[in-house]
Length: 339
Ligand SMILES: [Ca+2]
Ligand SMILES: [Ca+2]
Ligand SMILES: [Ca+2]
Ligand SMILES: [Ca+2]
Image 1 (cartoon, rainbow, N blue to C red):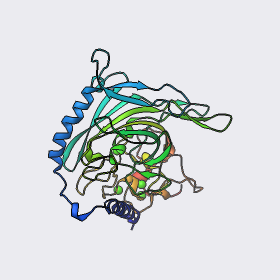
Image 2: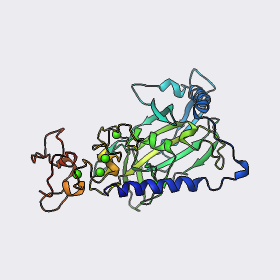
Image 3: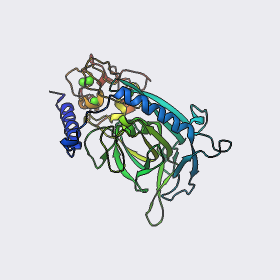
Image 4: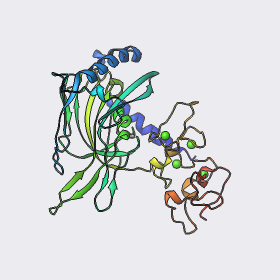
């Protein structure tokens, strides 16, 4: 019963995936390439790209839409043009990092180049926050193929993109899975507005994602993107929006139990660090997180029926301050509602 919403969300996601391929002409149907074989080819191409390209320009134009536009070009003079690869695991920025992500039983390396980390600022000292992979981001982007051809750009518009992998909701557009893998590596900046009310984005995160095609469109050709194309996106992370997917009163990013900024639905039988009761529904999609048959939203309210601030949710003894305490909505042996 408590998992109805979880399965409803899964259903929406399934419908979205089916509708994406509805334009496929059956006469042109070709079986998808084997993922392992395809990645063997792409991983060589991606490393080659990283070793033969450099950052040729970063626009410095604070407060204007083109601020921090990044241009990447083919190296023509190795003495003065450090490759993207030269930043691998650099202690200073820019820093190229790789994350291993398993998908379709392939161990992928997803490269992210962080050029600038977002920082806090402004009168409210907002910003400088990492999104999780199920939040929404307000971002600008430019997408290119490995040969540098630009296939798409936000033209510095700032739309809401939902990283959570579900169909469009709450005003946001769904994105390719590579965005969900990479955006949690950047931080937001802060927002201000001038006398005329024009919004300005300041000190936001800037970088580049380099994605195998399985994290883009794989065998589904798009306008200006051939099949099996690794994709390069230069991105600017202006701001973010948090969701509470299961409406349990705790924002999804706060249901990231191991704190790695990634929350996932995993296959049956695979242990999920973010599934407290181990019932297969990760906490961010589970409105009874500890499986005690009392809804989380009832367990995280005070005697007046008001939600506790997340950091002040008590443990079973009423302790609201000890770091690392087991908050009572995650303690199946604790049944205390509204007190
Ligand atoms: Ca996690
Ligand atoms: Ca669960
Ligand atoms: Ca939950
Ligand atoms: Ca519960």
